[in-house]
Structures are given as structure tokens and as C-alpha cells.
Image (cartoon, rainbow, N blue to C red; front, side):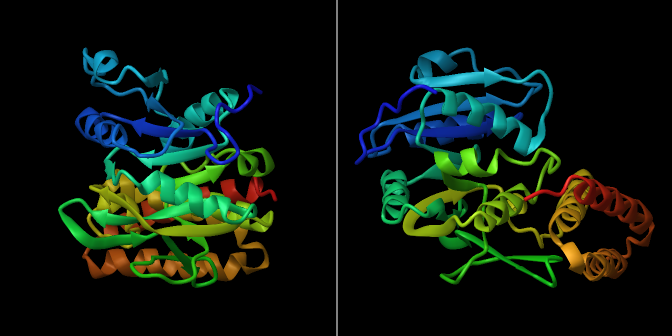
Length: 298
């Protein structure tokens, strides 16, 4: 591995931004990153096989950003892993996973790094996400909690003990990736942040939130997992990912957790008059459950 370009007091941070057919948002995100007060940092944009090409002036607009391209849509985990591997090879001591539909406060990265440096066992640091269209209203305070025997996920909107951080803005210490591994690519979309937080905590890493670090996020549906406005494809991906998660983590609680989750899936669709979707979503969940159980580790 290459040596870090940062000093012990200011470690090198790499910011990984995943783009999929969202260049307007990505440009806004990168523009906000240019105002960061922290040094040194590098930016890597991973284009996850978008149908729309990158702006022709991308290199001119962002000469200090590296653009990587995948040949197929690898999902959130797989796409981010392309960037993570690249920046770890370049010597990054911290990796900031940041959604492309965010903008950040100039002091946000400094505050997150400071929170990590206060305790060498802090492996993951979150920020406070605010609604982009209501900049003073908290969307997610760092992350959330698991309940219902791992079958339910609730995001926090105020300071509270957390057992996962939100992947829309998550600073990760290099040593955590070396210890835990990268994001689990079986979670194509949804739950990969919950899974990674849990895997890190199992290895003794602590989670922290820089409560003054502000990030504004447009995509409420990708954060609020209880939101009912997801597209049918996103709904299927979410249901499958919850199955993978329960299969991977529930252990002896698996039968109960699976039953609780299946009941919730059916009840929600029945309450919306969507009984016809229940069999397909049940199949997605069971498929994810088997996948997670077969590949459980750690």
C-alpha cells in the first residue's frame, strides 16, 4: 500500500461519491466539496454504468477529482467498493462515503475527522443529515437503531444511542476496512450501511456522530426505510435486502425475525390495497434470506 499523504494530525481523507444517472446532483455535490476547510482530501467519483455520459467539461470543472467508470451497475455496495479499493491503494487513512445527492457544510469533514481522532476505537463517524428542501429540518441524526429482533429499522432524528450509521454520509477509518472487509455486495441497494455498521461493531469498533457536521440530502426515500413512496423496483430491492440482513445476522432469532418481517410486509401491502404484490415480495424476501444465511460470516 502507498503511504498516506496526510500527517498524523491531518490524515488523508478520500471522498467516494457514487453516481448513477444523476450528474446534476453529482455536480452540486462536488461543487460543495470544493469549499471544504479540511486538508488533505481527495475526491473519487464512481460512475456506476450510467446511461447518461459525464458532462463534457467534467475534467475542466473538477480537475482534482478522479472519475472511475464501471461497465455495469454494481449497486450501492459494489459501486462504492470500486472507489474504496482505489483510494485505499492510494493511501487514504479515512474514506468518506457520500451520496451524490448531498451538499456539505465547509466544516463538516473537519468535524467528522476530529470525532474519529478523539478515540482510536471510533471506526465509523456519521453526520447530521438535513432535508435539502427544508435545510433546518433534520432528516437523519447520524443513523438509527434495529428493533423487532433485527426485523425493523428506525432512523434517528435527534441525538440517541445508535447501532448503525447512515451510508449517505459515513466516514470510515482505513483500519475498519482492513479488519471487516468492504461493503457486502449482496445488498444491491438498501441495508448495506446497517450491515457494515453491525459487522464493525462486532469487531469492537465504535460508532460516533459529529453532531455539528451538517450534510443536506435530497433523497429522503433512500434514507427513510419506512417511506411508502418507493418505486416497485426499489420496494423489491429493499425487501430482498432485509431478507439478506436477517439471514446473515439473526442467528437463533432467525425464525422469529423472519416471521415478524414477513408479517410486516404483508400487512403494509394489504393496508394499501396491494395484496397482489405480497407473493412476489415474499419470494424476494425468502430469496434474500437464503442468500444471507448461506453466506453469513463474522
